Image 1: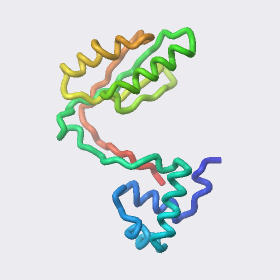
Image 2: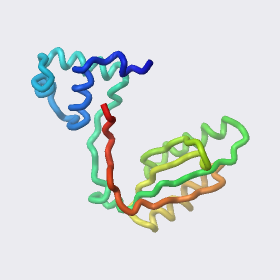
Image 3: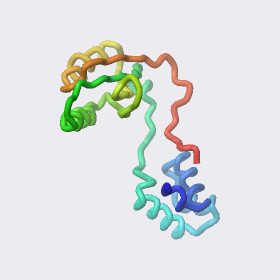
Length: 156
């Protein structure tokens, strides 16, 4: 059973509205879902306490900020023990260029989404940072040619 089963239609509607605009006021949410502002505030706090709402952030345009290169980096590890895997994960978290990291099944062990300014910055990221992480044995990169969809919204 997922936590979603504990939510009613109003909770789901609040989540949809917050996904569209995280800056929506409680008064605006209340008007849109048909509740009082204090009731909406109570529901939002409950959703935060349940860790369904993990936080709030501004969605930035990477290209306008000079990060014109996005790459998906597939990594194989050579790690005989669980402890080095934790060290690998801990190192990845510290690399600001890595915006997403997934432990995956299939041919590779990990898939990273990496955002950098240009090809030179990517080369420096690979040679100066990623390949210096213990346990990395193989790196295969796919470069993004165009973003056709870029969303963080869940299909509620």
